[in-house]
Amino acid sequence: MTETLMDRVLAATGGGRPAPEQTALERVEPPVAEATPAQVDAVQAYLDKHSDAFAASLPKTVSLEAFQAAVAALLPKVAGCTPASVRLALLTCARFGLVPDGYEAAIEVQGNRAVFVPTYKGYIRLMYRSGMVASVHYGLVHEHDTWRVRPSAAAPDDFELEIRPDLSPEERGKALFAYAFVRNMDGARSQVVYVNRHKAAQVRDEWSYGYKLAKQQGRSHYWDEDQNFDHGMLKTAIKQLFPSVDASAELVALAAADDAGERGDVQIVHAPNPERAALLAEAERAHHAAEGSQEQPVRLPVKRNAAGRRYRGKKQRGGRKGQVS
Image (cartoon, rainbow, N blue to C red):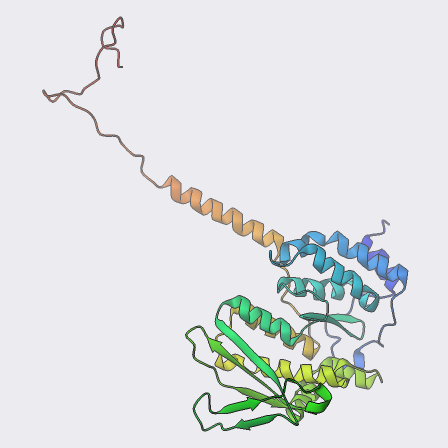
C-alpha cells in the first residue's frame, strides 16, 4: 500500500486522528513533549503541501513570508500535536490576518491538540481594521495611580485616571484592574468596561479549558505568569466591550473561534474553501451570461430619403448600379 504524506507525519509524531468527542478533561491525552527534529521536518512538509491554502487565506496586508517565519519558530513547540490540529489552528490564524508570533496571536498546546489563541492586541487590530471605531482606549490601573470611577456621572466624568509616566512599573505597584472603551466615528464614547483581578480569575477558572487541563496535568500555564495575567485582564475587558460597540462580522467570528478554543471545542472558522470559491465564481459568470442572453439586440434606425424610400447611399464612381457605399 502506498504511504501518504499524512501517514509519514503521523508516524513521525506518534499521533493518531483524534475522535471528535474527545473534549472532556479525563479523555485528553498527556501533554506532548518538545518535538524532535524529525517531527518538525514531517509537520513542516505537511504544512508546505498546503501552502496554497495559507496564501489564499492571508489578507494582502500580511505577507506569506512573515507568516511562515513565525510558524517555523513555533513548530518545535507544536509539532508533537496532531498534524490536522496544527493545520487548522494556523489556517484559523491566517483567516483573520494575524501572525502567530505571540504578539497578536499564539498557538496553544492543549493535550495533543494545537489551538489558535488571539491576544487582546489581535482583537484591537481587527477593531481598527473594521473601520467601525475611530479609536480604542485600554490600559491597566495600578495601586499607586490616581483614579476615580463614578458610574452615575456623564462621560467623561464617569472615569478619571491620572498616572505618573516617570515611575517604573514596580513603583506604580500591582495592576488592580483593566479598563477599555472606544470612540465611535462620530466622536461619541462607548461605555467604559472594567475587569479586576477577581473577575479575570473567575473567567479563567470557568472558561479556560487550556488552564484547567494544565492544572490537572501539573503543568504551568501562561495565565500563571503575572504579565500574562494582566494581558488576560485586558483581553477580557476588550471582549466585554462587544455588547456596547459596533462589531464587524469578522470580529464576531474571531470571538466565536476564540471561545471555541477556550471551551476545548474544534475551531471551525478557518480558511475559505477554494472549491466553494471556484463554484461561486462560476455561478456568478453563468448568471451574467444568462442576463446578457436576455437582452434584446439593438436595431439601428433606418435612413430614408425625402420621398420616404429607404436610403441606400450614393453610388460609388466606377461601381455597379445599386452598390451600397
